[in-house]
Length: 255
Image (cartoon, rainbow, N blue to C red; front, side):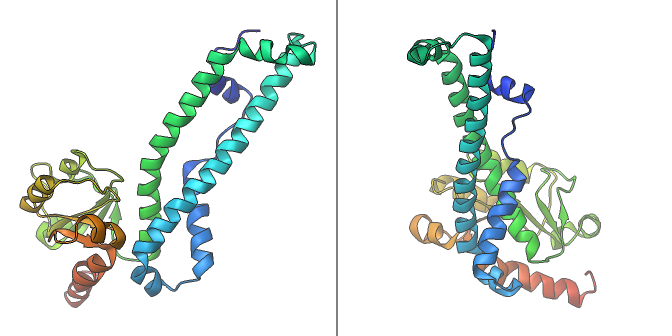
């Protein structure tokens, strides 16, 4: 019997790890049902809901990962037993030891996938909660930088880009914040949601020069960016930036 990769083996046996989007939606619904908040209360408590939903999604992911592993090993052992390779229980360690590198690669792949999913998960959680608030936006608009949300619409951006809000989410920043301010992108302001607590003062100053606001949970702002003028909590973003623009867009019959 020749098995070189347990991930590929699982695919062949139609064993799949739960879809990331399904996990995010389940986590969101669990937290949403826990509090039964109205739309206004979701907005007012967005900071804590975002953090709690991310923790819930990670907990769910670990549970689904465990179930996935159980299924993979169950089928794998049945294949070994059926092949006649494992005839006596006392030989289990020796037989499985032959596949040590196979298991090592399997767990390494899961660990790498977990890190990748964490980054994408934050963005999906943020975007999923954001959509509940029923603000006007176009998603993944094709402009320079391709932000998550262009508000109020691509149509209005083409008419008056300086009256629009450009919003995107990145779990960690590094240099990726530059993607939303590529040359030629215009807007009233750029807002970047994150839970990155290691953005340097120099980076924040450079972001300020490009009219970029960092938007993060209140707990991170208090702990890491207390006096930084271009770092906002989600509550501040809604109250001081987005809600006033909504009134302006309505007043001018844009929405």
